Length: 309
Image (cartoon, rainbow, N blue to C red; front, side, top):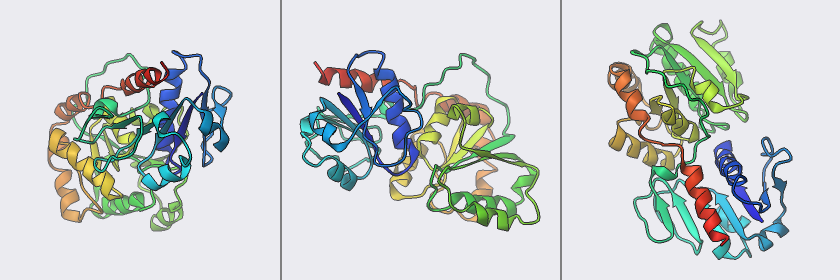
């Protein structure tokens, strides 16, 4: 059996593994299961087995997606490390006696560590339509993940309001399935929301259905940010933690995608909307398509199959 373990914080870890599992089932008759430490069951249906802790000890391969070493240690206690493949967004201190480590942001590699954005997993994009990028920014998508524990959404909506940017652009705002602060946004806009805001629940069949509504995407350098890049939508990152900051900084330095850091001030936001992406959208749209090729699931699936030989 091949068992996948997503970290219990945020849906990105779960969806990355689900993408790999869906890819892998086309190439092997091995049983594929998920060991879930949270309520992530959407998408499993009857295709993959739901495993328990006892199953981990007999698994031929275990694939864990996590940025939390403590989580790894707790869930993988008494498991043979030679059966473990670790997928992580961490850049540094990638230690452990695991069989292989896929670390897209790491600059350090050896015979166990596979790095580079070729290994960043995004959902498969099934559209064959190739559209020319829009000439100017009209609509901006906003989403800060299923949890958004730092309440970046409320923060940026306040800033956009105070800087009168709701009068200049349209905004598609997706609300995370575990977001707990919507009531504060409603209270802030108690007199009514601007007509330029459209709210969406996170129940799209594919994330690309939401992303394709927008010319630019504003997020926190999570999975959705890279899915936006994959289909040619430039991204703006407002981060929630140091890990996201380091990864967003790498994207800014290498590819020019703005990293606004933590809670950017009025001056930084005003300048953002008057330069770069907002001055030359076609250039950044074409650049975005070169960053993530969308074939990481194939590469990782091939590596998993090698472990079974």
